[in-house]
Structures are given as structure tokens and as C-alpha cells.
Image 1 (cartoon, rainbow, N blue to C red):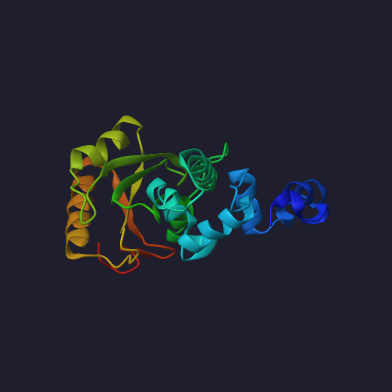
Image 2 (cartoon, rainbow, N blue to C red; image 1 turned 90 degrees about the horizontal axis):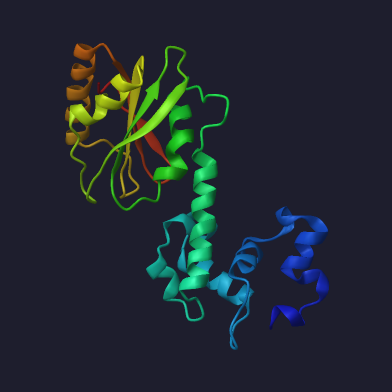
Length: 225
């Protein structure tokens, strides 16, 4: 059924105007982004198919690529890009450091800062979080982006930003595209090497957080650094 043939109270736009966008289902929100259907399918039908393709529903929407979306009949580049743009906007909102500096007190704070940014990445992103003496985030610096299996990290790239910004300490973080945050031997060896380099430079490495899909581990908490 076309959306225009639905009762007015059941149309996504009218529902949003009446009860706010929070009253809409996931399919209805996507339908508004898609904007229009095809001869065979309504925007709601297409939205439902997108959620089916993501397998985990809305929780896995961030993992979809342009190629995934355009495999759905009725979703072309334009509709796909609108959906991806909305997902990217959500990621940026979730990870943006507010005007008041974000303060890190625990490994959970690090995960909260980076989870939505990294959990769906297909490659490993190695990040250095620069902190001032109060534990406030000065900057999150992407040190390197590697292939699916590993990221090559050089101390020069890790500490150059910290030295330039006069950071008192740093926290290391990277993601595992597999979704499993369990540290590898290379993760542990790289961390210990960077901790020693930081000690020589007078910049303390407080922790190394590994981000998975919805879960994380702290090498400091695991006594691996």
C-alpha cells in the first residue's frame, strides 16, 4: 500500500507533525529519509527491507555500505546516500566532544566517546586521545588506518600530536573489525612499546582500549601494560 493511501494518522510525516519524530517506528523514520517509493513498493516497504538487510535491525544500520543498500530493488544512489548521511550524522553527534571539555575518569568514558565512531569500521583505526592535566580531552587524533587484520603504529605518529598540543597524558584506542575486542599478542606488544616511549618522553600512556561491536576491553584493567 502506498503511504498516500494510508489513513492520515498512520502516515509518517503526519505522525511526526502530530506526535513528534520520537513517536515514529524505525521503519517510519527511514521512510522519511527515503522520501518516496516505487511503483511496486512504498517508502515504508523499502525502509523495512533496509532493516532486514542490516540483519541486526537498527543496531546494525551503521554497518551498511552504499553497495549493500543499492542491492535493494528501489534503492538507488540518491536514497542510499540519504540514509548513509543520516547514519554518519548520528555517529558524529554521538562522538562529538561537547563545548565543555569531555572528561575521562574511567575506561567506560573512553568507550562512550569512541564506540559509535569505531564499532562498524571495516578497517582498524588507531586513535590517540590527548588529555590535559585534569583528564579533559584536548583532541582525538587518528594515528593510522590499517587493513582489516592489523594497523602498523609508529611511536612518532602517536606522540607527535601529544607533544604539539602539550598533552599531559594519552589514552590509546583502536577497533577490531571482527567485533571481538580481545587483545592480540601484537596489541599487547605494541602497547608496551608505546608505554615505554611515552615514559621516555614524559607523556604517560594511561590505557589502551580496544573497541568491538558493542563491547570493549581495557588493557590496563587486564594488567597487560
